[in-house]
Length: 259
Figure 1 (tube, rainbow, N blue to C red):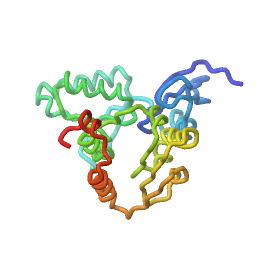
Figure 2: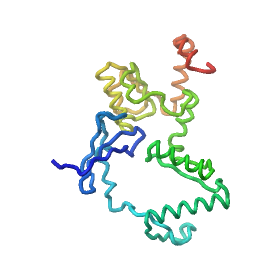
Figure 3: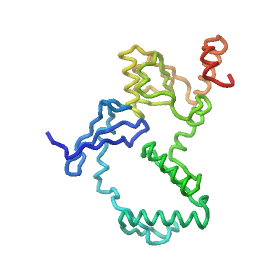
Figure 4: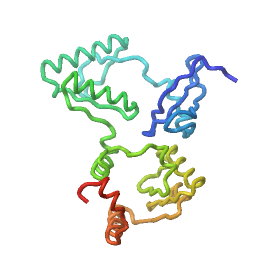
């Protein structure tokens, strides 16, 4: 058995679940990845990507040194020429240029782009740097494209553009509805919580999806709507709930506005 030089706790960079990893490192090589059983949100569970997908760290094509472009950036007619730089030189260069641009043209001349591979804390500090120091609100994120629709929907329906419960709480629910999500492939650890709730706690799983996905194997009810009719399905459900008075009056009074 290999004894690691050190164990590094980090967050899995692949999906938005944010699973905690323990990287076992020997001679600067990650030879094993484990999931701590005492850490939320995965509590010892990992998907195949989180457990085995760390080969990119030592990939020969990975850029490990800062690069500064030495010729002008004018598109494909002028292929980029780069030179290696130290971290100190690169960071000083970026800082000097950002300050210069902000002073000469105001912060509105600066745009920034954050990454879904970073943690929430990293992205918070990033936007704080842009807004508080460089005085720009031009902060974008890759999730704006893939997550924009759900952000708007969650904001309008729940008052927040994020989930309103912890992942661990899912195991305590009686009924789940999975729609528009191939959860077992996109967020396997969350899918494990749902499967365990069905198998061990007797929870009811309803899958609304025209595709036969892995979660349908665990479903009590599988509704195969026509593609593109998701909104119609939920409008019909809402109509029946209101028409037949199936909603909870106390919950509506305490938790909703404009009902």
